[in-house]
Image 1 (cartoon, helix red, strand yellow):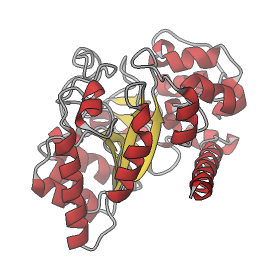
Image 2 (tube, one colour):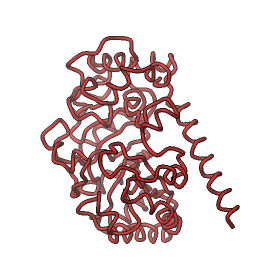
Image 3 (cartoon, helix red, strand yellow):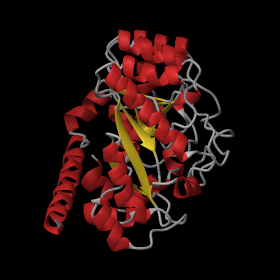
Image 4 (cartoon, one colour):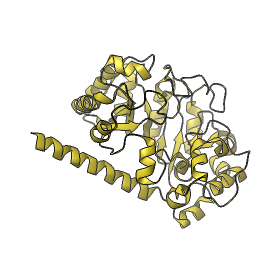
Length: 351
């Protein structure tokens, strides 16, 4: 039995590391793609925030802390008419990620957005994560009936006590009940959509629950996705060797990740090329981390025009190391860019 468990864990670790290698390969930006991107984006995907509002008060989240109400993100939700106008004007868009800083289910027009995307053959996802606390049953059915492709559910614990340490204001039992309701509708519609993923941010207060949460995820037909804490100042990992082994990631912190793989754990800046981030009100952010300033409004000026704008193109060149940093670009305030600009990581791995 012990041998079987060791083999299973080794296989899991291999699969995760192999996936990371493949992911790093596909996010490279060959020179010809950079040339193509001068005329707009590369590929057929965008990130479009469905709602910047959230009902939880997570300690490390700028939304939970109330910071995003005062910056470029603001407080609001994507209107159906704006969504329709954008996809109608850009028929090449085939994939849209809806989650970023907020909870998509607080958008009262989300059902109309999902149905229209389905009618247009557009794949929607919520990969940045949802908390799944307050959702009507008919909306859960809508996710299945109109085939949201996948959804990361933020569940940082295997019980209400540990879950509530970070997801303040959330209810673990309610989240699990909503997952079971989705699975009920998946059986009714004989559908595999949406694929459900249990996103588990590893912290000191929940690290011992990794194997328990993985087992629960399997029983709920969810893919278990352990994730490193981007700010270890909150509930830092205690048993690093345990985390390296039980997570299957082989590392216990983002610093270890950088040392092992020679790149940023969250290389969000790459989305400027392949899947630019758009705020709920149409402001082009480029990157999902950006909360400082925008590059124009795609609802007002058009997606292609904004992507070809001088500041947006300058930001891309700055990230490539082809031009000097400029104070009017949001990247200058980003801690990821600060680390890149001081190391060889940018030139060796970023593109």
